[in-house]
Amino acid sequence: MLQFAQSIQRLGTESAFEVLARAQKLASQGRDIINLGIGQPDFRTPEHIVEAGIKALRDGHHGYTPANGIPALREAVAADLNRRHGVEVNPDNVIVVPGGKPTMFFAVLMFGEPGVEIMYPNPGFPIYESVIKYSGATAVPIALEEANGFAFSAEAILQKITPNTRLIIINSPANPTGGVTPREEIDKLVAGLVEHPQVALLSDEIYSQMLYGGREHVSLLQYPEIRDRLIMLDGWSKTYAMTGWRLGFAVWPDTMVDPVTRLCINDHSCVNAATQYAGIAALTGPQEPVREMVAEFDRRRQIIVEGLNTIPGFRCADAAGAFYAFPNIEGTGMTAREAQDKFLTEAGIATVAGTSFGAWGEGYLRFSYANSVANIEEAMRRIRAIL
Image (cartoon, rainbow, N blue to C red; front, side, top):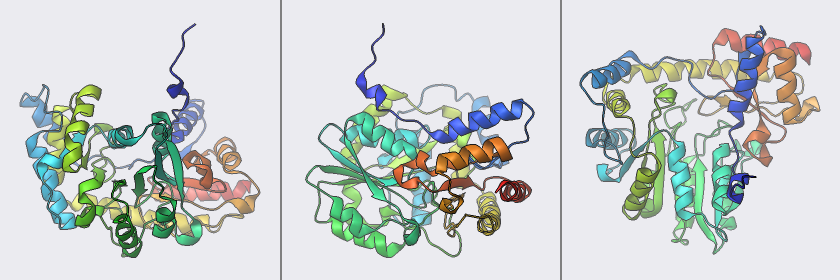
């Protein structure tokens, strides 16, 4: 009888992929399924990026690359962050990884162990809680509430800090809620963290270019007083419709560069060479495709929020960023999981239960509006019909 390590039992999953598998199985049986569950852009990667990847392969970039990423890509990242956030970043502090999750995993492994506390947003990206528990650390939820626009409260975070707190994870714009935390709350958080120099911060800014209604993105990189303990995560997957390319990055403080590079070497050696050249083209090439995608997401956002608010028992706050709506469904009398299953099996609409993102997600569903307007409108019609 094989005996696994106990830590494997603490490792969770990402339920959106489970819902996707169920939806695909139903579709293979002839059901007409509209997938508003999976969180990836429904656009093709812009052509100039694709061509750059193809050219890299034809030019012979087939071998290993530096564990932290090729220098030209790290320099392009630093230049892009300066353009977007007005900050100076040393390319040596940029670590390129295959997607966003390795940064989360490495940050938690660097700080997490039994007896340690790590804070994370709840409802939030499920991998946060999963890897915290895997590390043996205590996962301390930061409650994100509808009444607060699903923004975090700096005061609530600061009150939860104890001598055992080593890492705080924040995410804005947020998955699954679409919430965006305003500058004044981030100012308060940074000011309060001055009193807790032993606490590191992981700022997940993967949706940093997807904000609506005139809202601004506030990068934690803009606060020099915490740069020595800040890990800022971003990447290409959402902004450039490059989910399948597996390319992300993080800016790490000087003291963490060596240990995270060693984690990269032990984990994946390096990132696919051709993908990195495509990443350079994304950052240095035309940005009009990004603006066009965001404009279309904004149009869909307005349609889905309005549509969800017409469904009996639903109440949907304005979606401020990313490409998710997170309606309150308590008025239907169903739990989040019951609603998810009912809508998939009876209406052919794939959504994700709010509880897939933590206990504070009960009473909510996540709808991804990374789908066509026609499909969004048909999904609203079907859900209204069965309710």
